[in-house]
Amino acid sequence: MIGAILGDMVGAPYEFDRGDKTKDFEMWIPRVRFTDDTVMTVAVAEALLSVGRDAGEEEIKRAVIKSMQDWGNRYPHAGYGGRFMGWLLSDDPQPYNSWGNGSAMRVSSVGWLYDSIERTREVARWTAEVTHDHPEGIKGAEATASAIFMARKGYDKAAIKSYIVSEFAYDLSRTCDQIRPTYHHVESCQETVPEAITAFLEGNDFEDVIRTAVSLGGDCDTLTCIAGGMAEAYYGIPEDMAAKAKERLKSDLLAVLEAFGKCRRLKEA
Image (tube, rainbow, N blue to C red; front, side, top):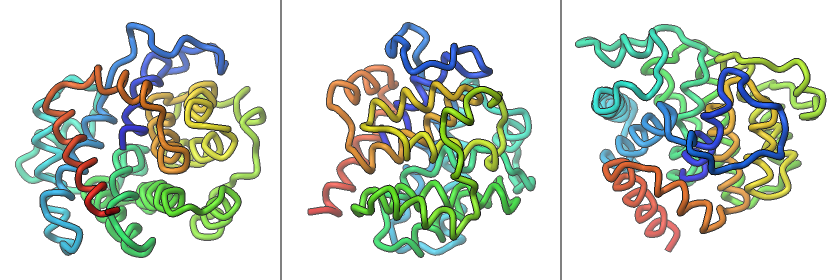
């Protein structure tokens, strides 16, 4: 999950096509900071930890709604979209048929917590449906969580790519060099998740995935958040990079991240 958070931070200064579309950039500039992507990633993780891995649909959805509203109101200026901000403030929050990439950027914890890809996809779908109940919003969350699950389970990139293409019909035929020239800021799952997966597939190590994702431009914090979650699961994350990301987190966010790490270690023991 720290890989997704780091991707959000490093991509944030280049959101809205503010970068030079290059992999050669200074990574830890003063403007590196967490955004709504990190806050909602933490919110979903905390919700899932609170109910346990065997919880059912309604329990998970109630927990995710409560946690996202709690964290969103704790960090109201993190950069939420207008419709989602309205959802955060609602006394009766309902899904609003969104295909935005928010469902995919917040889902990384799901890829780590469950023991089968079927369960992973099921829970990813539930975390999406509380807001992003459009088929594309659901697909983005399921595809992202599936890639993380497969990466942490030791599948190679060819197998991950094959599964994503066959199950979700994303076009992964383009290279990053082909995507980069015309890619622009767009906030849909269908135009963010495939590009993030492609950056992950092309990257040679964790840092290279982050740099490749940033170089594409577009909705850069979210795209790099998604790619970073996959890269962590596949490569691990260098300790110095993880430490620099953690230094930029508030204590309450860091506490959830540490609890999530402890749960993962106990699960893997």
